[in-house]
Image 1 (cartoon, rainbow, N blue to C red):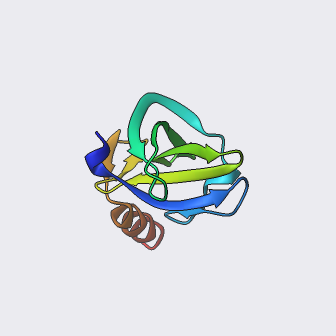
Image 2: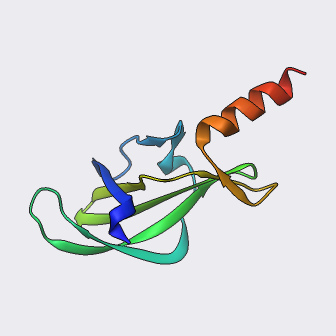
Amino acid sequence: MVANWQHTKTISDGEKYEINGINIWKYKWVETGEKINIKDPLYGQQYNFTIYKIGNPEINIEFAAGEFSNCVWGIYENKSSAILDSKTKSKKPFFMTLINKYLGSHK
C-alpha cells in the first residue's frame, strides 16, 4: 500500500501545513481505519502510520500521519490522491473540484 504514498513533509506539532489549501491542524483528524507501513526518510526506521480524513461537508482530504519522535510528525500524501466529493461520493482531482465550484458560482 505504501507505493501510492509519498512523504511530503516532516513538521513540528501544530506547524502550519496545508493540503490543497486546507491547514491540517484546523480540522479534526478522523481515522479511516487504515494504516500504511512507511520508512522514515531520514533514519530508515519502519513505522505504521494512520490514514486520516479531514475537510468540510463538501471536501474530504486523506493523508497519513504519525510521530517520528515526540511532537515531530511525518506527513504522507497519496500520489494518486483525489478529493472525495461528499455530494456524489465519487473521487475527483482537486483541481476539478475548484473548477466546478468556480463555474457553479459564476452561472
